[in-house]
Image: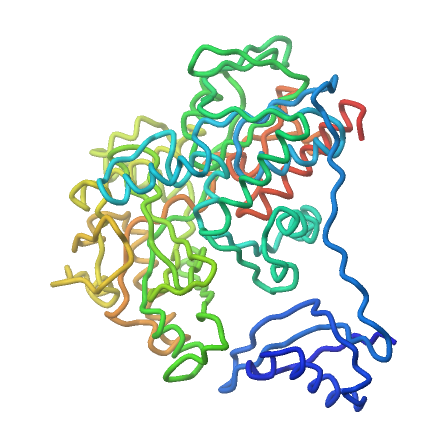
Length: 532
């Protein structure tokens, strides 16, 4: 007999298979000897009360053997001689999962990636962190795996209507991710493990006849009768296919400019902008777990916060327990910070984006009051938010003093508009520069953050503290541009064989939603090409 159960366990009751069997026996009244085993379907953490519990949903096998759990299996076809070909611009989650779905359908994917493979990217990241030199084609955003490879590997999404989340998780497991991501409520792989998984995906694509070409930066389209006839790359090469997927990510500003220059319709899309907040991880543990010292059986604690200030949403973003703040800039003279965690989340700091939503009216007013930024844009420019984003990043770089040092303040000092006399120990390798963020970030961002920090301190006693560091700027939360596409076909509204996809097109926000959007676009292409 199989029995599905929901149990609320203490961390100590999850330490071994035998202790879990004891809890199943206690909950069901069945002898422990009759419980042959179990399989966990879902696991989360409930820290709302003084005692921290682990809610678990599982299937218990009573008086029958545990059924063998089949590993995820996928049937990829050899497409070396396929008659249909699709060019995918970008090797981030969207591009990779588009390619894998095309392999299943018998269509050859040809991935053109502007940056380097994951192994080579590490050297460029080391130079960025140590020497303050950014490679515009190989950094935390550009290269194999895209921003997802070195931005923590969180696989949580609320986008359940966009596709099959379990299939995406199964694919990650198939390529080497730990099986527990299949049942964790907030699955996480870790920046240290993602490169091997991304490499395995690439090898699968190549072994089944797909193509994967690095150092191929898109520079132009050849258009005819609302169709792309070929794409051109910076080294003078030209490629053609039956369809073209644009999966270039939210930081490829040159692609947005290229689309505008070739009169391909794009639209301005608001995003959220703010800072990274870093606390000692022990402090967050104490607040969330109501303890002096975290139980070693519990993972480092996280949090999620949201507030509303004068109709502007303020919310935490990409929270990284046991994590590191990193320079995620893609161009010299511009400063962006992001956060990531290794799989064990065992660093002494916890960081999170804290960002503010804003409107076109906010940006236009800021432009009129700050003409010194020379945004080279107009109020109705589809690149308005991109230029605004870029202007803020340049201002942050100048305030940091160069070499990607980041301007920062202690949290209470920030709310009092006081430049901090000194800054706490922190994880940001290029280094922090004590600055007034009120002279760096737009006023509507600062004012919303000041009010929210005090409110968050009321929700999380101890959160509002000068032990926390406010680091500017977190500005790549999502794309500042949307590339409109037809709802039925998934193709661009003007160019019938161009398929904008993922975060860069404005249709995803994170690894899983980007992967699902890639699969959705692949399905649409297969339908159009008659291989559904």
